[in-house]
Image 1: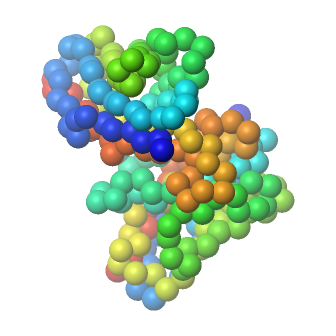
Image 2 (image 1 turned 60 degrees about the horizontal axis):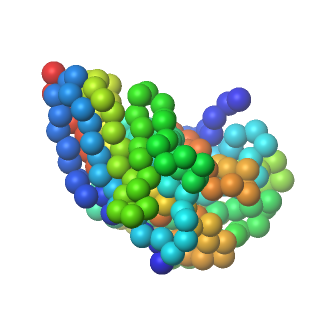
Length: 117
Length: 112
């Protein structure tokens, strides 16, 4: 069965310092993995997607994520945090479970990123 | 291309009432999925429609229903509202044969 675990519910960084949001996944086959961001009272915005073409995936707003099969991890990073990065981030694995009750995306519990000035 | 749109953005209802939420997918997308987001339960899958047919259904009571029209627009309906139905309801669309979903801004439902 597919699952995803976000290791931190809350991360706090100072503006200009690096961001690391951790995600581990469980999948019986090579998965599609995503990171979405949600700003307060907004919908989810796609940051990036991994599809096995390259292990290092670059996304929008300077974010990137590295797929490590041996560690079953898909951590999200950004070299320098900006105040506007403060939001909730979701790591997601695709299951394409047509006819199932889970839907096609399995969401982590989310990590709230706070950015201090 | 216009993104996924949801109407209304905010709703206040009282217990026992019913509500209908609307979602217009990205042009050309034939699949629409609905999610409920609450602080306690996080994001939970409600159902998915593809070409007017329900393809997946989550573990929600029968009070939650949906449909999709021939233009791919989708509606979800919640009957006999309960306080616990207060949530952000998100819809997402995709072409139907990929797994990349694009989300709308959500409808914030408050049940008093």
